Length: 262
Length: 262
Image (cartoon, rainbow over all chains, first blue to last red; front, side):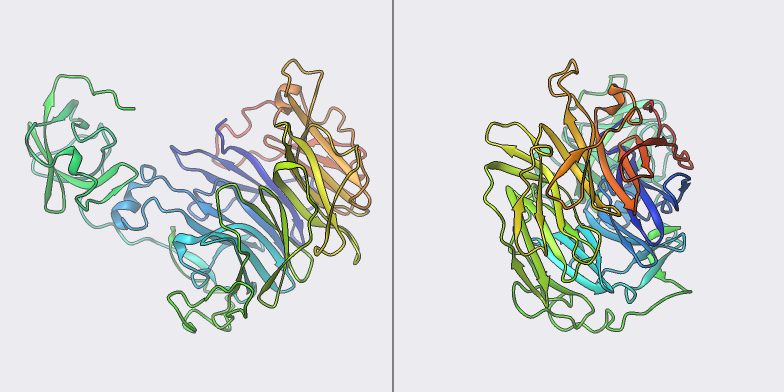
């Protein structure tokens, strides 16, 4: 079992008992699981819907008059959700505070957008005091926030907009000549190796594109060592990788094995 | 469906009396105050604790007490009462520890119930010992000096029961082959000051499974649920006897119960 897996939290309130666990890890992303029980003996799964508390490794909980409030900090790796990074590079890889309610066996997201800057509002503890939800956050110093719990807006998910732009592919995909694809380029060890496409490994052509030493200072969409650019299959033996108007590298297939990168 | 795109819930929605459009000042509508008057115009009020949010700060809020009591472990133990936008630092004892690892905090049963914080003390000799603090109202704290609680091990959570408190964690078992091997452990107290170790019997499982100890506890009167990372224990008599409880396997999550349970 990984570091973040296992049962983490127990609580009791008007809604009975609640257990929270976390499964997954950095590679596939963690997910919060939940069980509820009236008597502590017979339990029923009550996990939040996919996406609501994904990425929360250490959930926190408070019992309320109508159920529970669960929160935490999502720690989303850029490599886990590249589509999100292409949609919003500013939010990509950023930790984000989230607070949700489980009421009448139904999960909803609580609107905390007024509580502070999202990037620095990281819930660390929850409690209910009287009618108020109390949230202790870290980010800009340890801060205690208070809001009438009933007056917090409950938000429901909506279908995400259909992503525009070229299709997102992973290494190993089959690419067609003349088409452009989204593909995060891992640049921790430079841009020399692109990946495996059409059954071949692709390597950078020396002298083409941008020097490795200039990558970090070129204003490129780089998050956690992944460059969120696009590649165009110019010919059967040539792929151009660009970030906006900047040519990052030109790649050609070689029979070599991929270089080791640690 | 996505929780990254959301809308207000169509049914059961309670709109904030002071919603997001009523921003008083500044960029996010809430000015955080430290010891001053709170800004409540946007629904949230906040107060800073004057504590930097280094990574090793742990924070908890004690529920069922008004004004809220916030406790933190930052090197040593610290506590505040938070009322009317002001955070008043509580009186805490000097302790001979390098640092204190916060486990849990709870208010005891009844209107005069004590407030108890449990955790793990790390003395100068680099050992780790179970430790607790107790207070009548959160404003003045005392170190629990009961030898039955102070032992090599960790305390991770505490819950209020019908007649007192149950704290859970793990203790070092000198009979195990590994010198620092932990086994699940729980303690009960009527007043937060005198503690007795509970006999978990065989419910906590085999020693290899038990090595993580208990991580969380919740109670409903005499009914107590204690949680290890991979198992659940139930007591119907406030910790006198325990039995292992099965959780439903989570829907769609493989490998949750890879670790054998007792």
